[in-house]
Each structure stands twice: as structure tokens, then as C-alpha cells.
Image (tube, rainbow, N blue to C red):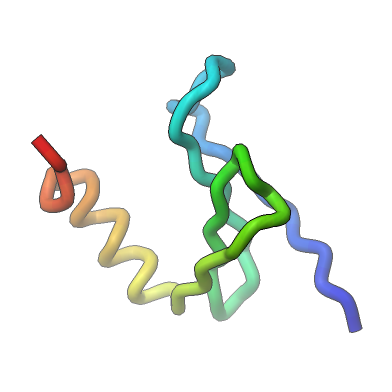
Length: 65
């Protein structure tokens, strides 16, 4: 069986070129890919890990500055 997920990009990404990721709900997993390379590798995370990651990103835990 082939899975054809519905990928979505954050509304914060805008329309300009840049570093964007897309996510797809594959319950019980969340898939993540580079929007500029949709045929490239994908990362899959369980929903708990996904929520922890997004919370930490929003908190600035992964800022590179």
C-alpha cells in the first residue's frame, strides 16, 4: 500500500524562498521534510517527540545565535 500524505507548510513561512519544512500527519507519527527537496529524506517522529521538539523550538532552546 502506498501512502500519499498531505504535506503542509507553516503559515509563518510566507511565500519567499528560504529555510522551510513541511509536515504531514501520519498518526501516530509526524513526518517532516525540506520544502525545497520534497523527494529527499524525511524524518518521522512519534507525536510526543514532535510536540516536545516544537515546544522547545518555540522556547528558543535550539536557536543558533
